[in-house]
Length: 363
Image 1: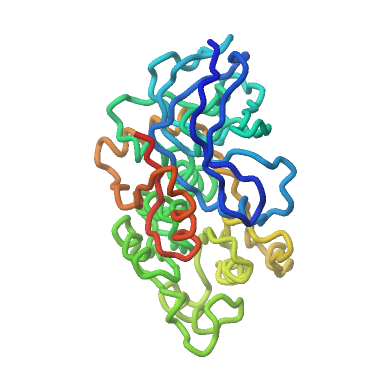
Image 2: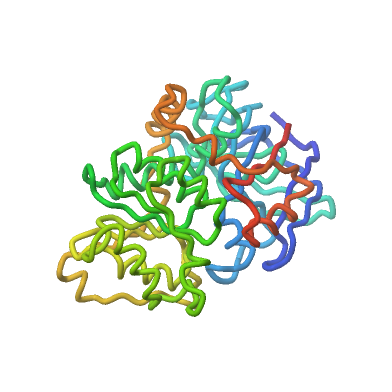
């Protein structure tokens, strides 16, 4: 199928600058393993803020498209595609599923500039996606929740079920109540973590944490007026956590902010035989420091890449949980914006004015 119709996309031309919403078009037939989709909804993950700001360092692929979690309709499939077909409703995700890993697409902007893209992008009205970055879902499953299956929910649930695997009744602390942190809390509550503590600097996010299963919440913005909350030696913050779990520390800690000081706090507050998992990405120029002896004595430090999610298996399982009302994840859904308003939405995210996952509505 030939696809060369222009459509809108949000393009990152330069780091630390607003995205440019402009027309792009496709200029080639679908290649083996490629799938053409029309977006219904996209989530905005905090990692996109990091891409824009250069958190991981200089970006060699500029200009390029962004977005890695979404819900879409399949319009056409390239040679060799077997996992999906025309008219399917699909989740777009960045973790690999089965199927072909196709060649990444290239688009052309309205000013004839080459625009790069990865195996999946979702800040665009239409996209060419690699077969192994999409999973078919029931047509009646809500678009907004489906979009979060691309990253927030699958990563959070995967962290708990595939990586931390907490023992029944073990204590857990989740630092950062964004989309992934809230999903970790919901999954840990389902598995019976006690006490389950959420830590964040925004009261409204902590309110959502309570809704999805947190037993206790700690607001870092008010824990100590004289000492900044985001310092690894904040005694008052440590004391607030230890007063809930006991003097030895938390059995399982998940750090989701990428804040270097909070990463160090997460490791420090973990029980000597407990597990600390890092889901947030620290700035490339601010590496955290840890006490190596504690690792030798039995404390575990893990990093998470998407919660080791297996999209083929996990997405259908989580959909069944939601449909059976075993878990209530509606509070994770944040404000809806149009693609034209994406820079305003990103600004509100940076300034902490949003709760839940910000969603781009393409309908």
